[in-house]
Image (cartoon, rainbow, N blue to C red; front, side, top):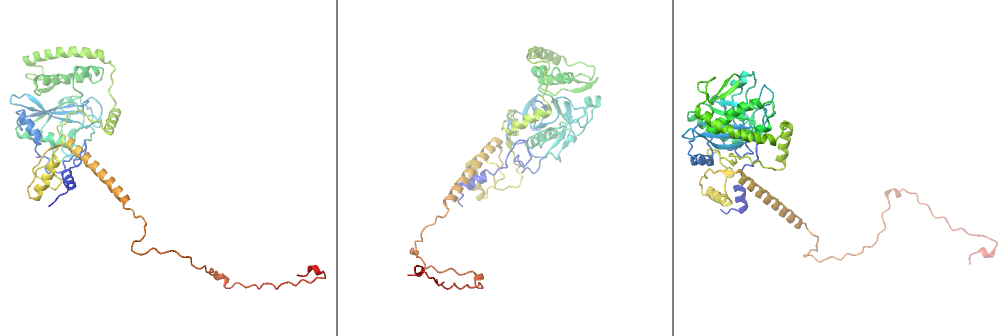
Length: 432
């Protein structure tokens, strides 16, 4: 069986079209038949193996609103957490600051715990899990709200939304950790990375005291790389307290924190001189307008994206175009294998590679269309002499009187008047 190069390209490039932050179809993961049990991609499994991390080791997550990023961390054998996955948050509603009541469209900030019961495999947003809002701190302030989720589909009204491909991975991280025995995992939701510069910028915010409280937990994790033990005492978060409220922080952590704070204070003073105390964050409308403009202009986010490749379920129904390929030569090999009845293996391919091939295919289709248009114009028939019969010379036919109109059949014929005879006495008046 002889295959044309065009057919090979069509079959090799027939992947799901990809766009950021969209539905499962446009993300190229429509072939995932079992979202809940879908394994982590091969590249991620290889990454974990290279870091000596178990697939089932405990996890924790961090969210940064302003940077629009979510991080997944996993514990190593010494119970120190390492960053394994970074995913762009494509939608969050409201402005910087905590959620206070139902319907305020604010995304939560604080420390939350997710249990297996809060995982939602039947979400209308591909997959999702409840953050656990309101927590003990929120309840101490009488805050209301429910179903504050992390989900796919890139649409948010108080939730944190990531892409379908990203939530598929994040859900898998949580599932494997629960199977490994973790009872719950911590989510730390911050307004921004709590650096000296960011804190100095926002020092006049109405939420600054709240953020200073959050920063203690942020700092403890930065120092120890372990999720802090969180409690709420006198309407404030407390972290790593031995024996609960009104207790002391472990001495080693206290010493490390003091050293960390000293460095921070120096950097904060420098930043405070750099940024005015009247700093204001952008309104939600302006922020989202800028995001839309950036997307229209094709600007690419610098946020790392560990979901930035296509995933294909090994158990999915296969077709000539359902599997990814890494090169044109592999596309041809794939077709040849199909002819010989060899079942293809599942592969993982970067989104950038797919987009590049899609662009090449579009350019090829455009060029083909131009060629067809030129050929169509070239095929327009031009009048010419018949080479089979001799050329007939035109001749002038005798002119025939035109037929009279039918109404002239009944027209009365008027006889011409007889010649008038002139009689005159003058001889000169007579005809000669």
